Length: 217
Image (cartoon, rainbow, N blue to C red; front, side, top):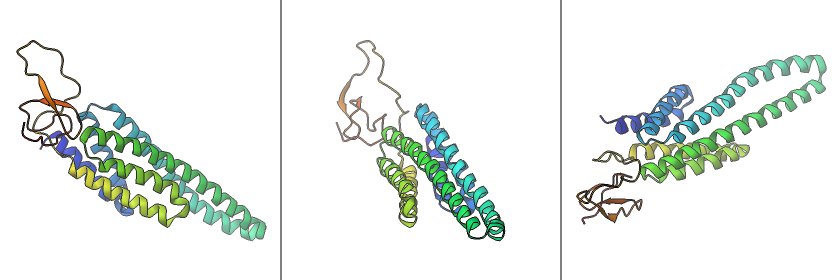
């Protein structure tokens, strides 16, 4: 199995598991490993760097929730007995501040993953990544409305999963940039890929840039 094939499958499986809280940590690990492999395959370090920041901010948001909720419950019970109505009000204000912090970190995480998906769309030619990134970012913002935001985030990861599994494995090695100038005996590109617009060899059957099959010359 090629590097591209294995890494896109890892990222796709990770995206699926990410949608289920019980195994979401496994999903995050597989997704991160797969994206790192895709970043190396496409020779685009920005994919990996943005993924790192997205995971970091996402984990911070999750940790904030995991730590804050028990503290709020225990502190709220104690303060309600000790301070009465004032204690309950203080607890609600604290919960609101925690929710704002979690919201900010989650929106930042979604912003970085949107960059990851946009880069993958450009490199792989699978434009569903752009749709997933946009929905993920909008969903993160709309988590203020809770159900609507969560629904958009869920749909975004479904689309991202489909996009990962839909990445085509080209029959030729991925080309990372324009070919260097050569002698007159070198075959020259005489046509362009209708999908991504990159110059391709006159006899090529697949685009070395996006992996799409080319129409007959």
